[in-house]
Length: 289
Image 1 (cartoon, rainbow, N blue to C red):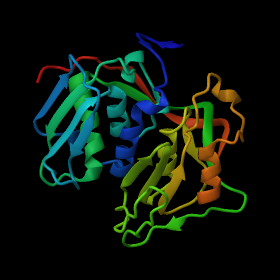
Image 2 (cartoon, helix red, strand yellow):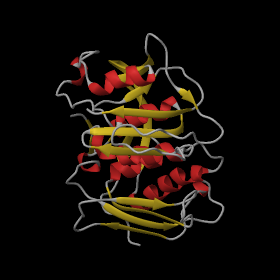
Image 3 (cartoon, rainbow, N blue to C red):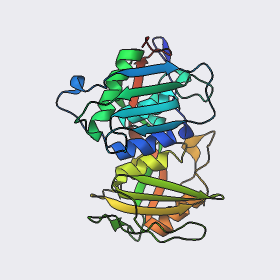
């Protein structure tokens, strides 16, 4: 483990931020002309003394409660994923950030009228800086990763239409007659099988989702432009390895074979340049409300 000043570095492990990645994929933050002006209204931020067994998220622009945004019982890693639209594997910082036994938080904030969905990540960044003293920088690092590429016979992807397309059921999974809205993700489970249904998803967003199922970052190298309505059935996530650099490129994992058969995409293991968020300073306890 390397050390940068007072902060011991670690990469946040996969399952920690899976839900947050799904939420971040739907948010699609982009650079704003005046980031410092983006802020929540009144915000209550609490470190939980007795974390619960489940978490919940909701509210904000585009939801049924646009004037209120909340995250209950969440780790700091999940907040960073949402704030910076970055994979959990690519966050480097102190050990407690994503630890299952580390601190958890409740945040309830008012959202100013006229706020767009793309404003929320910057608002969260500013809240973390104000209440937790967050300081960070970005860099690229070469590290073991999965790269998402098109399979030998080409992709089998459905370009997104103007309106959501209905999705036929399969096995224990019901029909989705209304499809899935653009920039939304729905994951259903039946036993050990999962169904991912996503509306108007870019390949970069899909790579983010796959990273939440994996033990390494996932880098999109498909060079496929545009957005796609994605439906994927799979049963076994990529397992955690004690030596990620030596994972074979084709080891018969169900997720990989299903990606190839259903979508014409492949995950290959190699070293790649990954955009990393390095947390230089952050407090565990927020400033008082």
